[in-house]
Image (cartoon, rainbow, N blue to C red; front, side, top):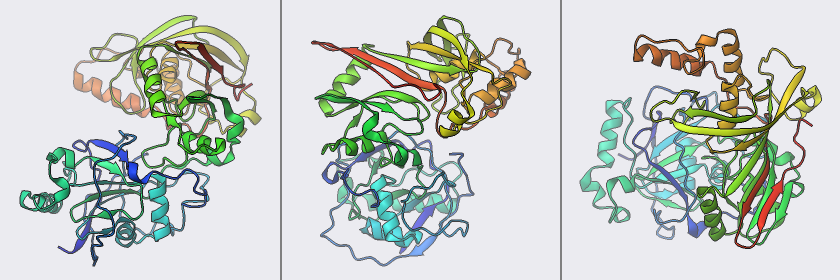
Length: 483
């Protein structure tokens, strides 16, 4: 079959994402910048585009042997490339002011060739745009196609069987010594001249998530400290610390590395939400990254936050339990639920302050989430005792004090004020006649939440400190945006 097949479906479940950056083709952080989920689901279908390639032995073969930054996200949404609703593709820069509709394409290579040419011709996208996608880290491969999803058509299943037939796989030297599951792991493509052989799976994030805020920041002025082993950054809201699945270019790590003129890229040691500002520690070496990870595991790193809440909260330790589902919104319960994760934070201070001015909100693109009173807010100093994703945001909202501008959690908190019984894990939760009825209530509660904030919310990682063998390290962020 001399064709390229594109999966117009979401490949989930059996795909184990371990997206790695090839060590032999490290991204050059000093390439000029001008180089270069609401998820939409569609009915699964195949497209066939005829290709004629001659394999060039000069191009090196793709290999799973690479060192790397792992990526654990499998979020993707698919649309066919011949959809006329897509705008003409030129280059990824300049960065658009807002993100467009998602588009992820899944391809199976049926005739080997250079990856840039193959994607360009298969998807009818200009080569410079594909080169930009590769530079942004938006193209991935696996030696063997992942399993089709449950919604796959008979045609898709037959196509999968054809390209994963044992007699065909035995002929591929790149797979020798690997289990079938190992060959299905996905890795990031980092060079435009990579050679992709027949049967290789490609995932192309044609519309990567963008971060226009990166181009508005004086990054050198956001650096708090530069040490021999690490850098402390006062991260701006509206930016990603280490990048996303489909965009490792527009990140704090990349822009700070450039701003400081470092040859070796900085390394992420811990995360804070894109919409959160404040202290983050970036390692200068892999060795120190491991050291800092060890301090986090041993709970030797202390983080203090300033949270600007829409209502007051009590001083002291607040305890919830978080649902062990790795998608937003994060649901929490005051009651212990079997299998849910302990969440604890300590409110050290809570003082009444004026609600942020309209100018401050506009400058930081803080969203109006429908809170009933905007005369006063409450600035709280928080000691994070456990480090769960969205923990402060979810716990404060569960206390009836969502953070200012939090477009994900505040809408649900507003709804709960009007109808307290809506929250199936709240103080006024109903008694449900069956698990099925409660499951429906949970889905309705999730639907009351909004989307992730675009830029800033009332949350700052105001201080970070840790001890070493020789000294104590302590750093503070600048004034939060609302002051």
